[in-house]
Length: 221
Image 1: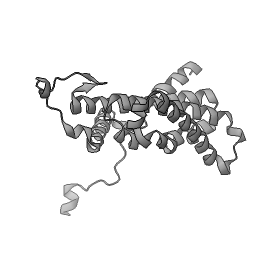
Image 2: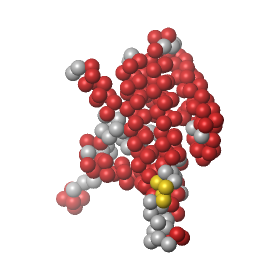
Image 3: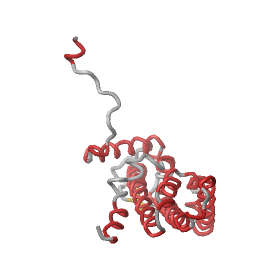
């Protein structure tokens, strides 16, 4: 396969086939906490993707100079430094969204997706493939967050990105917002339903059964 084809596969596979949230079940903390609205989900997605791509590029570039005994410490320091920069940018230019995201931007430092890609891929590959892999995983993560955020905001408030889409009864319309959509359990159930739907369409993503119940004939014996 040509280099361009390999890079395209690396970029697109994490969108659905190897999505880090629905397949590997990574990054659930932010997926459940910041998806009450599309703007917060989008901001979190962009922040994590930028940190993921830059940290993968930096770790890959210096991978031969990092002793194995301290590699995780070095990776965490690189990620934490980038997160501090992103957090300061958000506070300076997007203060309202930064306040609503609360501590979850800072928690990108310990996000399993970021550390997982730097440890498993960037540490063993050149910078360009590592950054493409990071971008693909960041886009896959972003896709799930934005989908869940759009559903929760639409049915929880009748709005999308702050614009009224479904006219509520308070304003003479027909739609009654589901307040449950703005609570964390709704994100949990939506994510579970999304995982179920994807694995129903793509059975290869389902884990093998750990226990197979016996047949009726065997039970009667």
